[in-house]
Image (cartoon, rainbow, N blue to C red; front, side, top):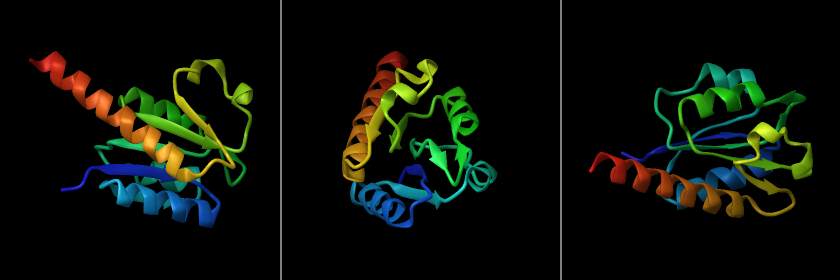
Length: 125
């Protein structure tokens, strides 16, 4: 069973690119969702990771982001905003700014997921 990665992105072509790169990396796509409420309503119990745009259809994703962080889900932010605009409480997250390609954020997230999995395995030994 492929591990799921959530995608929340309101630009169709960007969301489609992200989905393609997630699948190419061997993960299953949850979404992509084009609005925050739809994403929150369809969150599965388990996620391997998430790629989030900061502003999705005029709504900031911070409430969803907080929920994912509470669940210890690795998150990468993919945004057109300058990194300085992101609240300081999220400074530990991976942030990729557009127009860099979605491939970059997916690769970064996959490395983050791998590090998290290794850390969890190490702690359980």
